[in-house]
Image 1 (cartoon, rainbow, N blue to C red):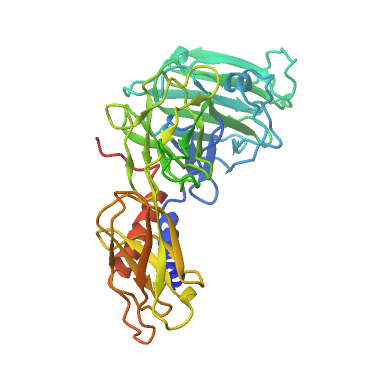
Image 2 (tube, rainbow, N blue to C red; image 1 turned 90 degrees about the horizontal axis):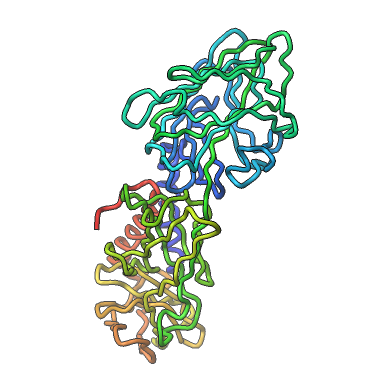
Length: 454
């Protein structure tokens, strides 16, 4: 019966989730490497979001004048580790997305990238433009203070051939003057077949905008854009024994972990622990010590208090070598509650047992076995809980007070509600469904919200 109630709740949640995503189609999936992922906001791809490594901040992009924007998956145009750009990132671009911008010959297309958070200024990110031959690129940028970046501040690094890294020929002319970097193949339009010719920039100042104005010189011009950062994995585990001495040796329910950018007080990534207690933020932008912290929440919303000044867990510097490992986080104690139900009116397995908090919301539940026994392995410590027996047609028993602050509770005797008294839906069901919807909704937008200061 409980499953039927929650199925109805889930149906409502799915509808609401669909409404949410219809209005947020530009949200890109966070990358698991240093290479960005992309999501188009309109069918032709002219506007969208570039999703960057956690801690960097996303980018909104808009394109005007192009004949089409596509997002290939990284199987045709590939920057191998032997190219300077991929070597800087530490990973080949094989299987990684990029932006394809198609131009009209004799016309100009402008791609503008708005950094939703001003770019970090520690030299750990870069942008690359590939297959530059039949177009002329003019690259400009705006600094975080609103002034134009100089050509030197745009940080041109080198040109290279991603199809042939041994090719040392300077196919492109690169003019750095004033507030722009202008790049083109001087042999085009008479000879434009230089597939794979690329360049990369590593800006030396914090930017708020980057603009690429591309003029089509011959044929059917197209060029590629990769955004990427260096990155580190942040990993750790939840103590599966929930402290010393062990409270409950069975697997800990998932613990929610949020990676916080301390400077902005924003959640930049979120994950949950697995059945073994392990967790990982696979791609975090490298910063010095003190840039990030982790906020941990137990399976029933319990705040897991950490040792730092915010009550969270410090993340060591992520700009070193190798992955960053967080010391084990001890999960909040969860206790086992067990007992039997009786009423002599049929199969005990037709009933469920639910635990309600002080607001009347369901925090966990279980099915009753055919012999009348039930077992709830994970119940948070509290003195104001209630146990309710639920029947197959909506009938509910009177609540039985439950106090788990002293540890495991066993041999609880419950009386099932009469299956002949098919009561109206008990009042706790509505707040339970609402609480469930709020919980799911909160999880949906967790990476986009701003945290309240502690």
